[in-house]
Length: 124
Image: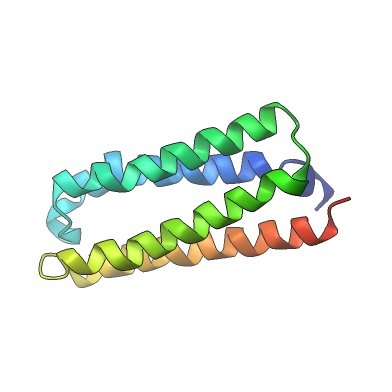
């Protein structure tokens, strides 16, 4: 677990990379089954890019967990909130699989935030 604590920013950056790949490559390929319009997927990638760059830079610079992890946790929670507001606007097009896809993404992000909070509480 120590290695994960030392690399919490890298873990987040890799998660953000997955959140960028998802709307740019996977979601468009699965668009007929998910129902999310292709034009919308770019909007979902932008916050993930910003969070990923911040996290990767923090890891690269070996930034201390305190205070640098707080914006990461808040950004992840804001992204979940953004999905909660943004996706219902496209409810008529989203399929059950589409809702499941994004619900899964939110669950994974919340698990990462839980891990980040755990690391933050134990930081020097």
